[in-house]
Image 1 (cartoon, rainbow over the protein chains, first blue to last red):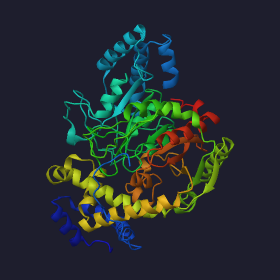
Image 2: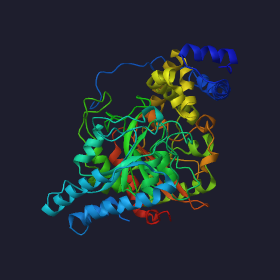
Image 3: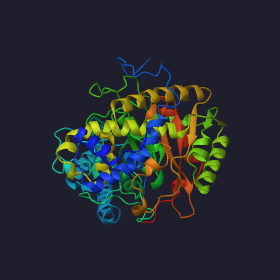
Image 4: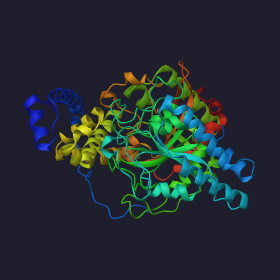
Length: 62
Length: 458
């Protein structure tokens, strides 16, 4: 995932309904640059099809 | 200073008064709190009332068990009826719950005496923060140092000998981190073992409730009281709870222990002193009868990536209303961490959960031949509190989050002291619902070493 531009960050914050001062937006953009490689890492290597978020019906004894 | 085991024996023998014990703990809290800021609220009146009730039971020979009359305290995300529960945040500055969290009630039924509410990183996530209604907790071994978090007040108060145990929560390491840096014992139990009803959530698929104490033996008493089925918690497991204290005697003889060496030697290298202490700890476990071998799990960074994406996405969902309406009431640390979650897409979250399934399957396969796992709990000794980077968790993977993803039980124990005189640590990890085996290993290690004899000189 590439780093976010100022405009992209502002758009995403607006979509989420979050209002932050400009200085804090800059800090957040720097943090997103650290998170972006993680967004790549959760996708590579390819996730096996069996790894689906299945619903289970009870927690406890098998 | 007594451990819970020691105090319980003295109370049962009518040689220690619960009232005098609690008075002494309250006095120590009053004397030390300005230095370590472990408590954000001390509640002497209900504490002394509970202590008098425990003393009456002691005198009548009707004690409820080893926790009766024992002073503890609760992390301030555990709801307490009639006592403010703020999550260390201005968002909840006036929040007074009408009901106790399930685990608060269970511990009270076991007879514990709560001295009050303990500092936490804001909503168990953002810290250390210096712009909140209360200052962050400080490490009793050196008050210029970080406690780690988020169960920072519990770590500090137990290490300082104010309380004998306390409650914590662990979403990415928030019990094990403070236990490690404060030199105490803390267990993140198996996901589903301890009810979370009435505990303010951070990220529900990763949130665990659990105890912290000076020794592993003391953890066994606290975990006994906190474990059990709660139909109000959707993740709560419906299964018999073993006798954790009785299980301590099993030790590690005949156990196969896998060392996840690549986590702490290559994926996020620990300090030389931490590594040396871990090697000495492994030698102790061999001497206690365990077989020690290396195991290879997926890279730590893969766990960290999945864990962080899930954590910030779920945390944002929990806090979405306030992030839209009153974001200025959060400290800067938490506001920014939550905002990061607001930037993610639905696909990001779903892929992280799918990766989590994959990581669990790979971890199960890699550990099929061992009973327990060992890796680091922290890189080294506690850093200076003001020097903790705001985004430290994004800069280097942490050793604790893999077991929030898997839900496996994980314990932090003290492995000695570093060059700065501060505690070192390691994690002992077990298979799902083998919390008793994890505690038994930790107890065997503590009994074979002398690290529990050294307390911070505060």
